[in-house]
Image (tube, rainbow, N blue to C red):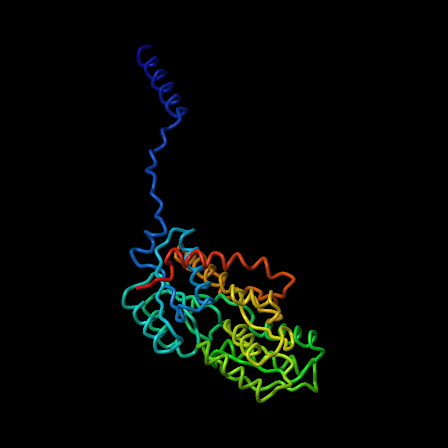
Length: 340
């Protein structure tokens, strides 16, 4: 009897134990690494030249404000002027000093040096120049606009404004991948729209303002019947406005379209010297490039192609673009562009 009772009690104990929920193991919370931790002391580096240029400053602003928002370590590697040798030197310095990511122009002369960074495992994001898959092996992504499309859109705008006026002049800062394509697509589209029109071969205005104005003045002297001018660089609005003023022309007499929503350019649109500027996404490109580097650093998939539109900005909608210029001016006062 005693043995039977013992077994009954044991059996009940086993049954109750089986029904009792087991205590869950204590989970040790894992501290999520910050973005700066992931960078491991190596900043994102934005490489640029032409530090005094308002377009370049707008690009730097996009980079700096994105870095501030996402609380990542960043460094601007900058030089004055537009010499290829200076740009290549800055790429080399960025590699030597270490980087968790590089944002750089992918113009042809710069790619061999940038390829060294890629081989060393540094992610490189190109900006301001669209790229095709496989064109630059190892490039993580690019952020830019459709150069061919804005070249065509500019041609359409000038053709409509001048009723297929001719001749039309074209000036560039340098002969580079982006500006060459802008001029090519503009010329092709203008001749398609206006078969009898004459589009002059592109000429260099360069980055020095006085020399650029003199160049435009020489074109005006050689072709006094010019109806329009298209400048493919951010200094072109000033170049053509000042050249026309010095030549005794009146605002609007020659239809000028230039590039970029900097304050001097927006002011010239308001004053009537410039008909329109192409709103290249100069701020958005560098801002997005930082976001691409962050996503890649976190192990997320990123798109290789990142394209933004470039609206033709006329007097109708010029006011809304002054916000960028205001922030650039504030950054100047804060010393953002005072690099060592």
